[in-house]
Length: 225
Image (tube, rainbow, N blue to C red; front, side, top):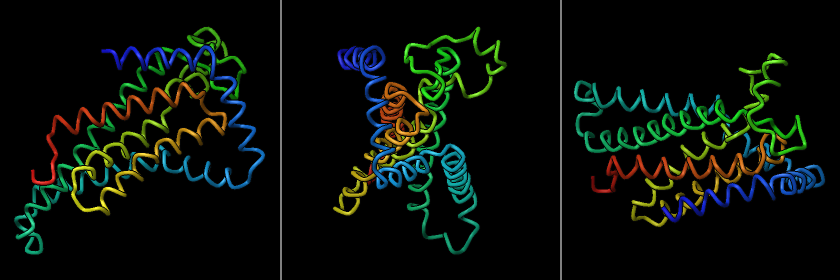
């Protein structure tokens, strides 16, 4: 409860005091340094909903197919343990993705916050009258809070982080660390492109982390499971 209150307070600090300053600072750095533009491009790709959604759905369906039909395929007859593990991993990622995205899109609709490339005011929430007047109610212009790109990235890579942390080999531990930082790269990219306020990305990072952790713990995925 204390952690929740702390993060809620931090989110409010972002919205009321830091969003505009941080947004302008990161955007100016992005315009000034070319190497940052390459990093931003990569971060944006690593959170692209079109790519992430299809990737997660494909691997889940593929793992489900192997789980159901592997016994009838000679090549996989002695690989049941590994196929079951693969299925559990894909299930953790799939459920984390579904739950976190459902939460994010619900919040988007409820808050209807204007994106930073349409306004300089980070307090433009609940813009129902404006969105309806401009016929943009169902478009993305007023769905800034939280970030869809960041939730796609965080639901995938935070899930992989928790999974790889259970493996003992050093290489897996290093990969886990890499996976942990990728969503922050996507968050940076979305702020630099003026697609989101910092508080949009911060909330998505929190939701992605805690939803992934919750699903991971519920399914009790361990190296020897």
